Amino acid sequence: MSSYLSTIILLLLFSLQTSVWGATEGIVLTDDVQMSLGDAFMAEGDYYRAITEFKKLTFLFPDSERLSEAFYLIGMAYYKGKDYKSAVNSFAKVRKAYTASNYSSAAFYEGLSYSKLGLPDKAALSFERARLFDESHPDAANAQLGLSLNALEKDNVADSRAKLDEFLANYPEDERVPGVQASFGLLDEYESQPRKSPALAGTMSAVIPGSGQMYAEHYKDGLMAFVVNGLFIAGTVAALDDDNYALAAIVGGVGLPFYIGNIYGAANASRKWNLSLSRKLRDDLSLSLNYHY
Image 1 (tube, one colour):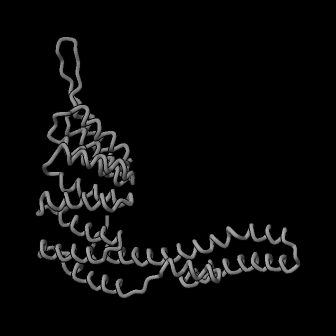
Image 2 (cartoon, rainbow, N blue to C red):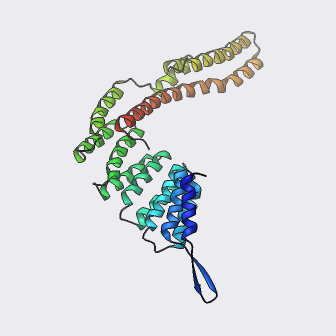
Image 3 (cartoon, helix red, strand yellow):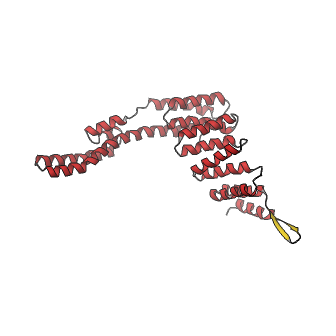
């Protein structure tokens, strides 16, 4: 147990006050102490115990001025613990019930959670909420960058570029402006790179098994598809030449799924190629924008 957590626990113990009313004794626990205990577990990276302590505050002190903060920190603990679905629910609760200090941050991290869940449309809506509620809030600027990166999830480079233009217009004094300006070059480079056509790759492998994978630069997969399908085709042809139609049907029937899989595999290889370009761009942009969450 770290010295920080030990200090908080000692503080909790010293805060337990005993008041005497006749023969009755009671223990007084403040919301500040309860919040400090949750903060201590957060600092330790023990997110689920932190959630427990923050939830205790919401039950024990339903009228506390720190209630909004507790719900927000519950969401952050879920987010850091990579339970993004629970994080979404917690941040949404903050937005709906407490429309003040934590709204923009809750909406921003709600958007990040949706991004982690692979739901770009919902992420975009949350980022817009964070941006529009209070444009001067630091997380409003973060949400603007989130919208740009989120557009790339749908390979919408034009929208991503437009969101960066909006960032420069809305936050000209932000320290990330040079990185945003440099990001336009990354988008230009991405657009200049050739894409692989899934339809073309599938057609190629239908004609010559493995050639579509080669086109998508999955060379090992292409060689394997060529050899396996070549053996089945050769075996089927040899059986037909010997008038052994039963054997030809068996060999051909067994080989047919491999042939069809080879076509689908080629198309998927092309999609993976294009996706790898998009992911690399997103990683490069995140670095350029200093956007790491």
